[in-house]
Length: 238
Image 1 (cartoon, rainbow, N blue to C red):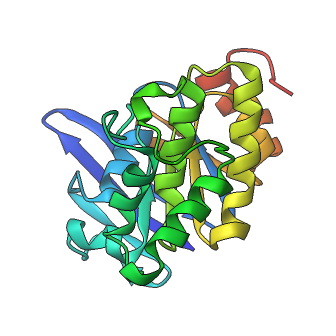
Image 2: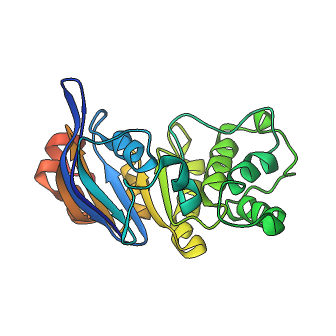
Image 3: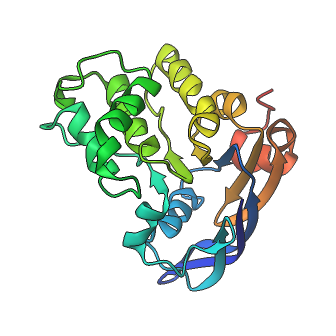
């Protein structure tokens, strides 16, 4: 479980996270909100890219913010980004292996672990293919393979299906739903596709202007009037 208490971030006069209090249980949880709500800032705090001005984050009873940022990957924190991070000139295998090298898992099982991660996300291709030769959907799956390799404890997915057509989004959803069972990792999904969030996440939290406005079972959250007003428009998505 991840327990967030009083988390605040300020950039000059802007407060992208304002006294955030929320918990994320094991499994797959959603984190939604309009653009600029603070979702990626929250991921950046967990990853160590942003230092909060107040608050605590405990992950599996460990003080995550007290851990040096470069140790968090080795501890088991993984994430994807809105912009692809895989290196186009390198092979699929080498891109995934780069992340494995920074995990606690030893080199002895690296080849097997990397191939298992590539297989898990459903990439039925030659792992020696360069990432730059792949289509958009396949490249996104490489990003997820990088996030699940090496026994992660927490997987943060930042809009993994953005811009993908419906069929590839469904394929991504099938992979996301299996991550907790396959890896044992607590998974948090940020996405604007409410169909994807609904299909993957039993519970969802909502940010608006840096404040948590709702948290609970996904279906109930998406019917919450505050959420509909802040993010989903005037009509329910269900």
